[in-house]
Length: 153
Length: 292
Image 1 (cartoon, rainbow over the protein chains, first blue to last red):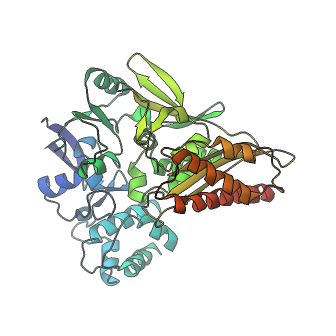
Image 2: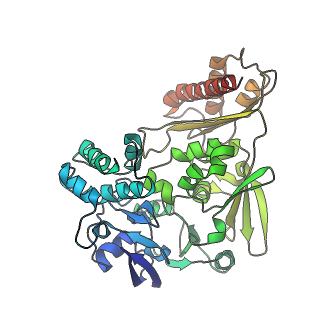
Image 3: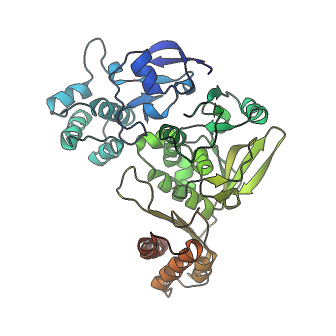
């Protein structure tokens, strides 16, 4: 099986990789780049745990082959922190108790971040739409929405 | 075990050459259907030797108006259809249907070309595109051909695309003055749901308030989306004030059952499709009355 050479940016740093034909972005992030913040839940685009930001848009990293990413820019939950300081959104999740088991949190953060990048002052409805592809089985949606609202004001 | 080699084309010619030279090539763009099928080892997947990525072919990503047509590149995402002002303004039916697809992440990645070529009976874009009389342009190494979308669809998950062809354009004639459109969808829940039933209606209401040129296309109701000439005939020529909408609902559900035969889902789908067409016609009449 052939390997594909691909160059793209992850969290503002250029990466040069060789990837297999079946390697998905989530595999590359977790196995090659050791960025294990991004979680795999369902693997079929239903749960949103693997959400990352690709070229400014929230996407499922389980439904993208890394070979497709030449020239792209990926932002993962690890890239939210800048110079050791958490993103205001991360701080809001802590302050609003928006984390229970934490498995959905990286995906929730990335969906919320993508929303705020396009629309810094979303309504509650817009927040819900942005999160419609993210499941939280602890069902802590209220606190999550509250956290996002607190930085969107 | 599904085994394939990965190929990436940066231009149309390169993609067409791959399709011409190699066998068992499956095209991937957004991947929101095919990677799910690969993950689930779906029986729907054909034998694949090569997966050909076209997602970086910039010339296949466009939305433009050419005379009385809107032309859409196959790589335009569902989010693109939702937000592009030209589509929102001239083809609100299409941006409305795109809104109902999957979730934000799916809409950011899934494409109109993929939705057409995957040809799911439940595809949310197919009923509106058929109702709008969309055409698809298929390109091969030495030429191209154009088919109406309705003609292009050949069965559930089946189209008439040849192995050496690529979908390169979707061409939609702009509905003229006096046309009204509506989209209805029922899923098991609001977000991330596959349509249990959906329905697109495009219809003209003339100066005398008479329905003309009705196009009524349900999704998930027939083996693959198709227009229903019987119910369309029943609507045409009726006054918006006098039309017996319940009767139209009855004709609609009878016609759907005549296509599908009685199936396990018929006791559910029959009354629901009747309700959807009634809702859609009521919306259209309401919209027309607002404009008066």
